[in-house]
Image 1 (tube, rainbow, N blue to C red):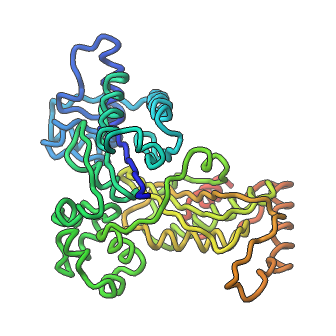
Image 2 (cartoon, rainbow, N blue to C red):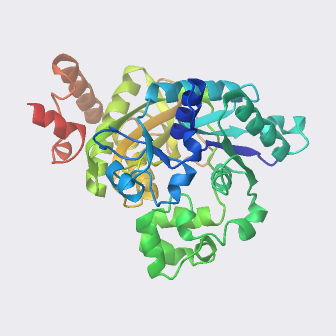
Image 3 (cartoon, helix red, strand yellow):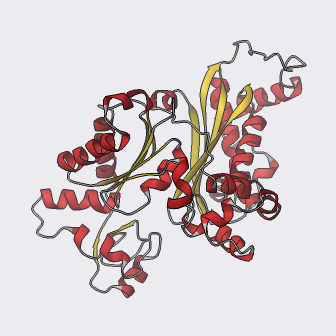
Length: 411
């Protein structure tokens, strides 16, 4: 059975939700219809642009730029402060509504999610008909609009939802990518940031189709694992699955917002090492091992990307988690400054549960090195007694490595 995946994205979520609340409270003006932003301090005009209206785009206003810059571009700009509590409430109500259709939902941010519609597609004349029911129901019940992308995998569904906005349903099945996706500028490919685009231009790759038809070896030579992944995306290849809330709830993870944006792989990986230790410690304390690791990046402009992989066998060892996170980071990071990093584990099993071997396994899996186990135990005992920062690996003591550096400053 061909999978049917929806990607649902709220149009200018923060601004739309603010507009709905304002209108409910008697406002005469709809922020969505005028140049408007959600930003920081309105009087001082400090902070950054978190969301913008469609009319604001005509002035060249960009998400993530300083509010002061936005007002220079459009002096009559309307601005409202962020209300994250209200956003969470709106998001929760949206997810509850979507669960009336299916519980196979993976929420990837406050304003977007994937739905695996495969099991219930038979209830509707077509996937597009089902998406229209959902889209129009959201507008009627909540007063804001969404875009819905439809495909057989998550990547193409997300690409489809980014086509013409707002309040639209688009399909992008594998047989449609040559016509609908390949002519697009390379910068519109998911996870192709400014750094990648500059590299592609040097290789005379200007469209997604150019990349799809390029030699994969050449791309890998210049951009390594991240380039290989982008080449696969350009060809519509993505085997990641929708991870429903039930599976997510069984996971253990941790994330941190950095004191300063990380701009090098070395800095980011030092933070990932710290996060891997934290997650590994929590797994061991819970008597669990993980079969899957995911890594999340939030960039300086608040855009989020995440990537996941299946482990060869269940593990709770720091170094196994760290190695997996680094591989995911290398495949995902586009060279842009990083604001937040996170590691999450899923598909947990009891630590004492026997490992299922395949017929291709030559050796029995070896237990962690005894010295390594004793070291972990000793470190955890010291941290339990004197605090989590009592023992820190030397690799984490370098300047600018996130929370560890902040802890040093407080001493």
